[in-house]
Image 1 (cartoon, rainbow, N blue to C red):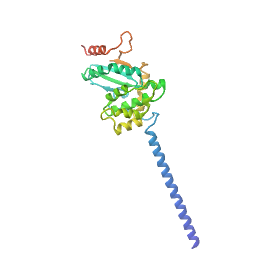
Image 2: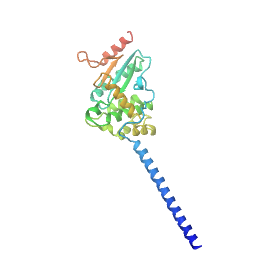
Image 3: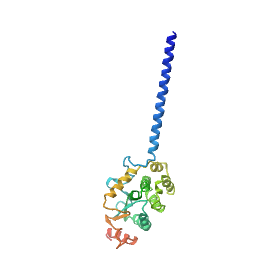
Image 4: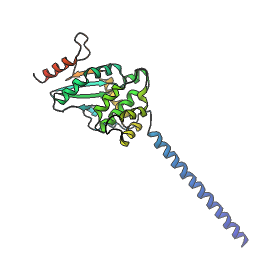
Length: 242
């Protein structure tokens, strides 16, 4: 009887050891999974699926459109949110472009690129473009796009790499600073889409930002006949047959 009791005690001890070991494996596995999920929320390296923002159009859905689809003229703008020349263009032409869109005369197609990240290093171009795509998901692209240029840092200051700053700016756009927007920014939901857009720009034959095309024709880079808001209106009128 004593031997049987010893065997029972040994068997119970082994059972308790196995239970503790199994619980340890479960806890470690859960911790590892949480770590993966948390790291994926703020990953600095794009590599996930290419996720276009809502309403994106064109080949591979790389275009963020603004203005009526049936407008007689289409303005294509390749832009980088870290690019000082892009800010200059926006400051000079923003009101004219908005007026023409509101009048139903112009459709604008924004193509977001990361040329400054490539030239100077950093991730501000990409992170800002992703945040703008997140704003497009929320139907707030134009307001947020304009705000990013208004608050653009110095070219060498990669301030837009800070996702917290991008979210803080969103608080100035009515209805944008939501949990869905914050999650989209932190996770880099559209990072791979931004990289694909940048790759398309690299293969487009254009090499600087902003590149501005009206119905496919470059209208911004000619120093002999520089573009002005008045001339842009004239070119749009001409495209409308007026």
